[in-house]
Length: 338
Image (cartoon, rainbow, N blue to C red; front, side):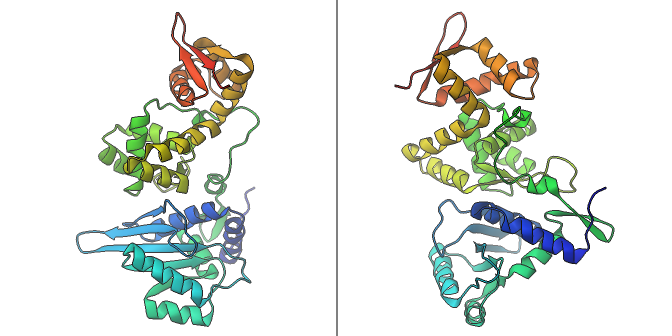
């Protein structure tokens, strides 16, 4: 029987879960809450973190309104209050960025001088109780069942690292073999609310490829999935992580020397590539048929499904400078790192 909670217990539950997140995961959580509270708006984590600066960019645009806003997310112990110097630094960051307005979100509270500084500057403040009550009201992290609430474990499971033992879930095996298309999809996610229709329209890809390349970005650690695949009233939405936002910024500026290391790190950290690279470094080479067998043995995929994904995995693998490919009767992947 599933645990149910009243509103007070649900608020305490989301607080515990939010405080257990990493700093960047907390920013992504705040982005989800903001997106739910302002459906027409687009929010995205900033590419480069600065102390006292803007963590999340936002834009509300419709036929009557065009407002840019900056958000700072402070994951503080409840005993650690936010003071006026932090508000003043944030005010300067808003001015530097050219934002129309700003919001500071914290898990703790604000001092009286901080509240006064914010009021003078037109900065909105959201303290811990307001944040966690809003999460319950918006059903972020909990599911409502009549007058009671249940933990939304699928939502919280979207945060955190993959299990490094056991079979790799099929979703973590890429089915996307064009890095050019990947870049286009990542750019469209950063420029929109990240829903499938947004990606299809902006990137000019099919709905199927919108999903496949968004998932590829997720495997690389460039994209965060905001809602579970099923069992939710919400449409699945994607958003860039900080490393994803940084990668897109470098690609947009044509700074290949800065973008490529981020991509290579993402590929190396993909679980299937990590296991493959370890095996390849020991064996020296691997035929394409052996690659298919390896994917099938290390994942939840059948051999026929592994065969369909092997070409994409191979493309990812040979992107690494330590791996080359030899074309003969059968393609072979060769470990060349000295």
